[in-house]
Image (tube, rainbow, N blue to C red):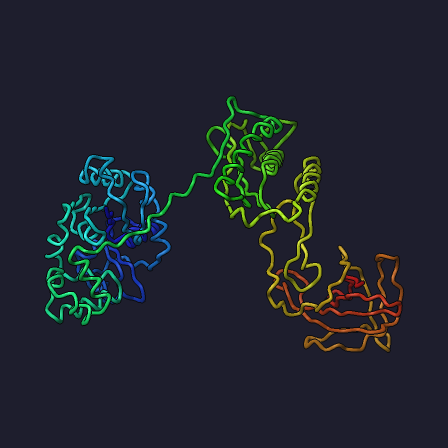
Amino acid sequence: MVVWCPDWSVVAALEEAGAPPRSPAAVLHANVVEVCNGPARSEGVRRGQRRRDAQGKCPELLLLPANPDRDARAFEPVLATVEELRPGVAALRPGLLAVRAPDRWYGNETYAAATVSQTLVESGVWDVRLGVADDLFTAEQAARTADAQSWVVVPPGGSPAFLRGIPVDVLRDDGPRGRELVSLLQRLGLRSLGDLADLPGEAVEHRLGTYGAAVRRRARGEDRSLFAARTPPPELDVQVPFEPPLDSVEAITFSVRTTAERFVSQLAHHQLVATGVRVEAESDGVVCSSRLWLHPRHFAARDLVDRVHWQLQSADVGGSLRSRKESGAVRAPIELVRFVPEVVEPAAAHGEALWGTASDDLVERGVARVQGMLGFEAVLRPVLQGGRSPSARQTLVPWGERAVDLRPLDRPWPGKVPGPAPVRVLAAPQDAEVVDDRDQAVDVTERGVVTGEPRRFRVTGRVAGGELPWQPVKAWAGPWPTDESWWSGGVGRSSRFQMVGADGRAWLLLRSPAGWFLEAAYD
């Protein structure tokens, strides 16, 4: 059985644009009409026309851009609807699907086609046509000859007779090869598929090649091409209802333990693990709390219970879930908690190490207890990211949460200080001074030229190990100039220097419009 939804690209584009479905419209690619709908065709618009010619035929023509991804997304609900009636659906292309005819379930092919057509029309697909035949090509042609919301059933063994009168123009849908073959067949005087089917097989293959021989077999009803039916994805969401609803975070956390274990076991049955899980809480049938949690490895049942506790605790006041206008949190007792796997990966990619992961688990449980007492964001871990300065290359994320939206490390980052990296980065840069032979402050021009060679430097604030008094510069390197974030009140034009003092310690100093600062220390 083949289900055909004509002009699907136009249907999907009109729906996305919010235009009336019966508006004359055409989808263009490279300023050429790729698909047009019935109202446009009634005005003389045809496939292959140039943009100007199409608008000349129909001035009110709505021109829409081609977007295969949009067409596929819009066709997914049609696939799901047919899949509920008969599993094993194959999407041949957006607007065209195939499925094994479910005659045994509905009595015969006619009743099955009527059921599928009625279900799709009720779901909002108004122009749907079905064809049933022995082979895929004949079923598609039968669907194309059917009327809207109707079907054509070719009796068993009747494919050759049905195809004889169909013009060879139907082969244009095969793409460039099909259009080239149609042009050649018409020049040879072959107007219908029956004319092609009557030719000797060896002569067709010799003159038209392998593709022409395959088309001849289709025209004779001998094509036995199979389609790859998709397997419906398993339903992995798990939820737990509460009757009566619960208004205590501790009671909800205790009640979701079994559900969390079932969620993890269900994923393990499919040899999957979840690295991203959305936890949703409902009250009065409305999702009142929702958050996506990411795990650096994968979620276990205890991890999910902790996430539920942390998520609901953020809206907890005095042990019960109450309204907080400033956070937009839960406003009523919780009647349902749902676990939705957003990111799943093969379990084999997260196998345990040779000696297991017992020590890692103990550390994570200990940290989780601290988070339970102090809050989820009270325990942080450092993560390396891209940047020019040592402080910009580090960020902190909550323990157990995967770092996202980081600056990439593989970018060149012009102005970045080369390695080795400093071992100690000051939380707040300390004021410093750098002078030359004449005790004049060293500066850097707009072209990155140092006004004098650094001879002495000191830090006016306190750093690790006490104050840093004036000392000679034993060696120095730089400058590494940068000019960043000047449009948003950032540092602007600045330069960094590496300096080694007489005591052998090395420092990273910054020269900015505000003066000299000590940023970091080397080992």
